[in-house]
Length: 134
Image 1 (spheres, one colour):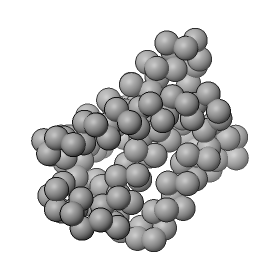
Image 2 (cartoon, one colour; image 1 turned 180 degrees about the vertical axis):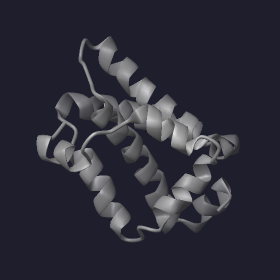
Image 3 (tube, helix red, strand yellow; image 1 turned 180 degrees about the horizontal axis):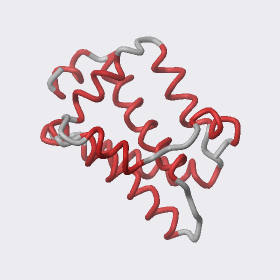
Image 4 (spheres, helix red, strand yellow; image 1 turned 120 degrees about the horizontal axis):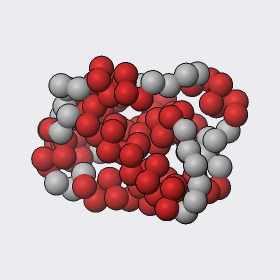
């Protein structure tokens, strides 16, 4: 992970964020991110630029997996805290499979990358917004 970006994020408490977001639908979280408007593109770029080459390889795999899950409308009503946990755990598992370590900042960045990607798609694509229930 890019050290400047990691310092920008500061300390990340994944368990605290997961608890805070528990009870809200993931679609509502994505709707909140859509409020960034055109800034979503820059946020998405920053998320992905922060990964080193090994992390980027794993991030691409995890992103594809969650894009596949998102084709099921029930995904969008899932608990946002649970989705955070699943994305970060999947990223960590895939990193560990390769013998690479990760930290909470990088796992949170993985979640942000997926969530910003979905929000950006929803922002520019009315059909996608309709599909996810926004």
